[in-house]
Image (cartoon, rainbow, N blue to C red; front, top):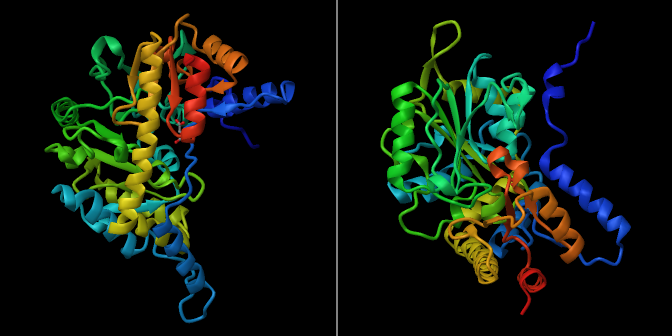
Length: 406
Ligand code: MLT
């Protein structure tokens, strides 16, 4: 007799961005005249850059010709893309990552969810608070959350990162096995210094904790000292998996391409006491369950890592970061307390009345602007609100005019 996974009923409501989309749809239906500006989900608005488009056009032509047609690609991504990634994102920064440690995928969100297949059933998970909800929800789905009480799951260890501690996650007080970190951070838009990141890496090495490092917003770092990769920190290859995404870097939210780095130095005991390689396990999982990203997409992604495309995507990033500056400075000018928006496309502001869903409703009703309530990112997110810099320049300026006036 079939029994359904009971852990799904421990999830709290809808996935955050589905809930927001639902509320906005209800509002839009009731107010068809409202000119809604969307600064909620971090979805890009600028088109793919010319170098990416040309590469994809060429790839389409190849697919239409018997001599150059491609069927199934290699399990872990084409070598041309894996080598472009290694050169651009690692070797250029003096980091020793090899091609066979890079696994190309269709999204960092899928990878951060799927990576749990490498955990033993009783792994104890730590997350930052506030937190990108995917880390928590996927662990709840597989039974690692436990009961939800007082705004938190009892089996998950939360590491508060708030204005009070400079958004540096507090080290766990209890034993944990896995630690999710995200820098530049979603939702707060804050980064760590290399020394702060080293403290976390040292803790992980000492306690045999596996770090899952989500670096999806790395391209938005503007300050020279902020680390782009966890592997800039000595010892990280002994304790960390890194996730990167083309979504925000190259405008691939609708095109889909990402990658995960699983160093060959990650070796742990499994639940039977055998020493195993996480690189080999992830490879086995990918080969068994995934048929790869399309050739056309991988050619487009490669172009974003080569000189011309890279210059173009940095231009787009700079445009979004100008939006971030406009939002930060406009809100500060009228008295909001704001964080982030310097090395990330997210601005994290203190909600005047405290209640972040009430602020969401008010902003939508009064100014027809959509943002993301901090409470959707966990208990420590209450009292805050996230705005993205991904709108068009025109909409960013119009939104700030509505909220802040002249
Ligand atoms: C966000 O708004 O937090 C992101 O767009 C979500 C995602 O990347 O999945």
